Length: 301
Image (cartoon, rainbow, N blue to C red; front, side, top):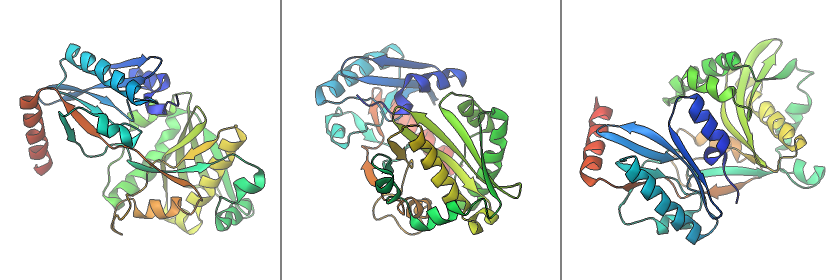
């Protein structure tokens, strides 16, 4: 059973370091990490990309176990994100479709095969920029020092303002980088920071979760060069997949916040992987309705 990083024991440790309460269960036919989240009028359980199961029976067992846990925790609802789209049909009748928190669609690059096969999946233009990086004064460093997350955070704040999207707090990102699965990459040209990226390695997959670049970085193709380095290092480590972590849904408008990211990611010859999306299994209908109403009011404010 392939377990995504967000449902792993390593992710459970991240939650502990963040001061969160969580519950990890791994049985023969299912696995899940349920994180307790505060909500108006109570609490709920959140399973990022979970629960995980290979069979329908395993998924049903996981839901039954979750129902018992939710009752013990007096949860208003359980927020699930099954990886297998078919498993959405197995969810109980008391579900509500929620806004997708983790990407429903992602782009995955196969890192296996011969060097020739592998290289053919990378854009030739970016490979050319990558090979000429040193000639153009570009260097790439890695760091596991949580204090260095400031470089990525500063770039992300500028990007968030431009794209009107949110970013994580400094404490959250620092705690992520302090985990053994995380590596921060910094791309510089003549000593000036142009781009940064944060990746997580788990199982046979490298997850490309966070990244940003400067305006000067765009001109120097910094993100492209850095992405090739991330992929090269993942293959050298013996990893088999590179998960670009999210693309815009099929048919999304050109002004979708992820449109540019998606176009870039699809220049690599990968495969689109679709998940089920985010659903709420409602256990207390009255409180859930009040929860949704309060969220709408909060958004308006």
